[in-house]
Length: 297
Ligand SMILES: Nc1ncnc2c1ncn2[C@@H]1O[C@H](COP(=O)(O)OP(=O)(O)OP(=O)(O)O)[C@@H](O)[C@H]1O
Ligand SMILES: [Mg+2]
Image (cartoon, rainbow, N blue to C red; front, side, top):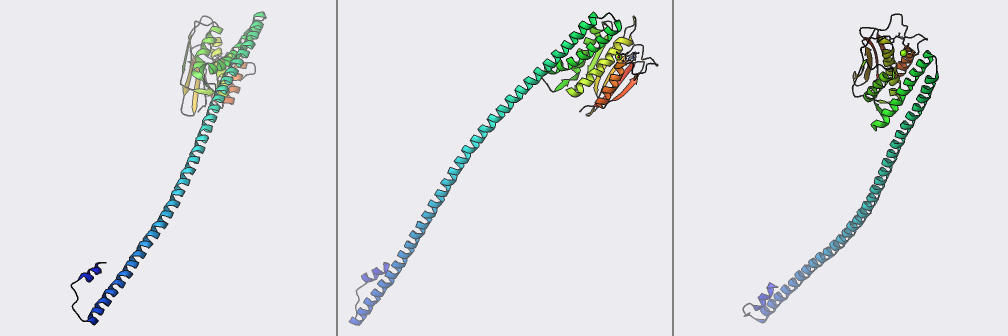
């Protein structure tokens, strides 16, 4: 375009042939200018075409992004539905656990009540019998039943229906046994580490303690003799516990055969210690002490 200026240049002062050449030059310049213009136009066209395809590409990308957003919204909805379903099933599981707990508590309550009924029946029978030995045997059986009932009572009162707080059970048991044998003169002492036992271990262990404390109450302090009975539950390590029953009474006579068929108590202790996988150690006197050690995680 700037070349047009050439037309306005100073007048050509020449002959006709020079004039024609000048015109030809100008025409040539025009042609070149035209070609250049057409190139520029083509370049612009290309740019526009590029813009067009870029626009189409952008539109495709935009559509893809919109699709992804749609997918994400669907996925979010699905996640929310799954989350709701999880919350509902968690609530259902909790409700059924609560129900199971209540039922378990109810079962322990009923077992305890049934054992109390058996206890009352034996009580009636003991009151009606005139034979002292029979009455005493009935009372021993009553106490065995009562100690099992106490385990169930401890379970439903502690609100942990699976494991027995054994220390709590021991405290109640010793008080009950002393009053049952009418030995308020004997000092009873129980000490327990925090040990919680499943019922299948708590029952045999409770029965063992019942036998050992009963023996101490019945045999260790004859006549006017008094003294003390100490029951201890100790955790030895992460895997084992020890239960000991000790008294400062007369001691177990050397001729007392603790495994003899004639005495039920110590036989029961031996069977139950085997059931627990326990070691049994007997110190006959000064002080009399019986230890049982068994696995209890
Ligand atoms: N702590 C104790 N102090 C003194 N003697 C004991 C003690 N424990 C047990 N004995 C003696 O050991 C014997 C055996 O005890 P065991 O419990 O087996 O029988 P029992 O108590 O006589 O009868 P049961 O069958 O009713 O228990 C007792 O008769 C008693 O002589
Ligand atoms: Mg006995």
